[in-house]
Length: 138
Ligand code: ZN
Image (cartoon, rainbow, N blue to C red; front, side, top):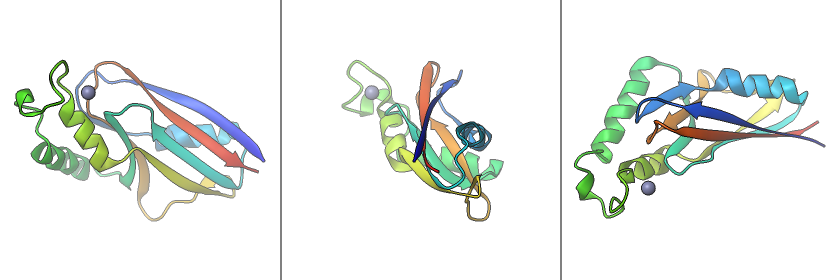
C-alpha cells in the first residue's frame, strides 16, 4: 500500500471565506500516483472546515448568511469563549460545517457524485492555516 501526505497552506485576508480546493486535492492525487484508494482532507485548525457541496456562488453566499444567523460574530461579548479571544463564532461555524471529508479514488480520479466539490471554509482568517491531505491506496 502506498501512502502520501501533504499540507496545503492558506492565508486568507478576510475573517470568513470559502475556497474550492478540489484542483489542489487533484494535484495531490496526481503527485501521489495512487489509482485506487481513499483520500482524507481535513482542516488542521478548530476555526476552519473542509466540506463537500455544490460549486455555486449563490449557495456559498447562502452558507455564509445561514452560519452568521446561527452564530453571529457580533457582539463578541455574547460568547463565554471570548474572554481573551474573539473567535467563538468561528469554533461554532466549524462544528456545523465539519472537520474533514473522505473521497474514494477510482481509476486515479476523485470518485464524486454529481456536482460534488471540496471546499475549505475559513471562519477566523487573517493568518496562516493548514489543510492536511492524506492519500492511501495502490
Ligand atoms: Zn478560540
